[in-house]
Length: 446
Image (cartoon, rainbow, N blue to C red; front, side, top):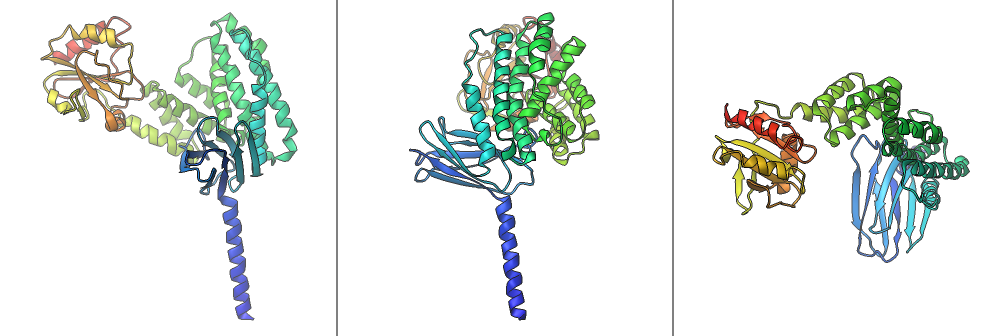
């Protein structure tokens, strides 16, 4: 009897572990007609807009693929599957769901537990794509077009209302409508500032915006967060009748939202602004304030990491971080090689508008006293730049982080003593390089 009880207990524990495993591991499988040997990848997010994506890739074997995503502690999981060409798919699942995607030449079959949430998003986009684009390219015509797309999406979503759990339906609806709502909000900036913008917003855009209740649930949808960011900027401009800074948007969101949605929306705004190369000092101030009020652990961790990098950034007077890059002949050259000279570091990733101004400024200085170093960051070296040409190669990410560079082109002035003299010199295209030349002259006098 005791042996039987032990076996019964072991069986129960094993069955429970199977249930837990089945509930937490998400499976995405399927077939791609004619795809044997091709590479396929899947990326997924459990905190989209906040945490980085995780990804897996594999080769399609016998036209089939299968991904088992590790367990994530989240009420919804967003994924993007890319098998090349038109064989891609974006969907939303409950963690633990199992979905199958079968790609034909021009068809897609979605099946499995979790198929309904993915199918409604796919069919909604197909229905929206069938609405012919406007013949005119003006802002009002485009806004009306997106308004029609929102109505079609609402009708499609309504037919699936009872087929999805309430929480998942709310997330899917916020994500689908948020995507199109962000597009209609974008039309506002295509109109002329002033009365034309105000009329477009009041008569066309605002009446078309979807009725989505801001909540902890809708905060899960990344495209809804993107929409709210655009709406915050539009609301600020329409009410204040002036353009806004990143700090203005930060304060607006902080004042108009609360709870988890506020935490996620502010984190998303800060992360986007930092990635776009916004004003570092202003964003550092916002990040510091955010860390004092945020409650959501993942959001706090994401902004704390970025804030730490901002604080570690370079500033005037500190030694210029050392690095070595190959010159145009392939020989490694260290920054310290130019000690005793004023150095202008110019980071670029393609042809940029600074070339004429930099060429003009370069002629004003003795090459034995001032050197311009042009650092290409994407294998697209321009031989026409005057001065020294460097190719960043694989080291570029580390150097950009050291110098706190998030957008191109970027300029840094290093003094004769090897210390940073200017981290954000004026744009030389604004005044034919006069202000930048003055800074270099001042550095020479040190």
